[in-house]
Image 1 (tube, rainbow, N blue to C red):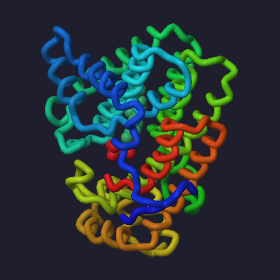
Image 2 (tube, rainbow, N blue to C red):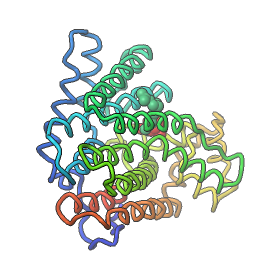
Image 3 (cartoon, rainbow, N blue to C red):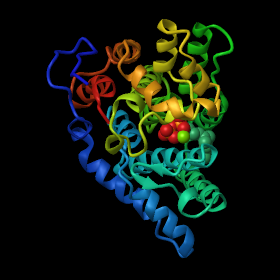
Image 4 (cartoon, rainbow, N blue to C red):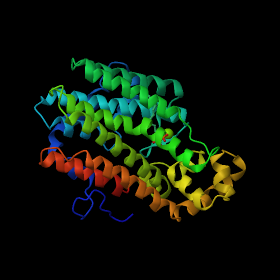
Length: 337
Ligand code: FPP
Ligand code: MG
């Protein structure tokens, strides 16, 4: 995919996540160590599953957002690292449970816990991480932050439960899709930015609400692009087979936009209705969507949300942290993996 300028910031080479995280590089090293240390426990089986999952090559985007927003005011390293680690552990717990729900056997290029062991151990590993994340947040001694964290969990669950379908018109399918990704992905981005901004800050700090909105819009843009990459990236980049969403009947924006132009494509409709008679045509159907205008249209939609995120940053003090937050609005749209 080509490099695109999304935010009204000067166009140029798209930033990569690692360079954007430079202002919090040392904090991220400490957060990573805290995350990995969670696997050090006496229970050998749990320790084994945790080690596998906590050392896999995640982007650490959520801890980075937490650390960046916490850097807009005075906090201690230990407190922001604990909050950042909690965000990543909650995210990891939700992915382990999601892999059980979706019966997925690969994530980030590695076999899932449910595939390697079984569903019981996967659910319990996720539960343990969920508990650990709650312990870390509770340790901060901030009931308002605990409240935001708990509401994010409730939003995650409700997003995960939504199943957009093709039963109504495509506009209502798009609305349902956006509601789903807001819940399952963007609510966690919003939580990271909001709680980072809240940590040890003045309760009336106006940045808290703006950064929550920033995180929500950034998260929606991120997930739309994730759903595009499911069609356009390689298996090596994805860490799972290309076109998994269509093959599993998951309705995402590229398929919705494709059907606007090609309403009679029975392969796509059949696969999204989970009609196994169309499984043989899945490769061709993925290719048809991949080569269609729907991909660019979905990217344009992601760009709108990235712009809405960037607008929320206008009142922030200039500096490397604000620059990084702007850079992330470009990164989420331009990324290729
Ligand atoms: C991935 O979606 C799923 C999520 C980002 C959220 C999953 C949320 C839950 C299971 C509920 C909350 C759970 C806990 C432990 C608090 P996807 O299947 O579309 O993407 P994928 O391709 O990465 O699997
Ligand atoms: Mg899944």
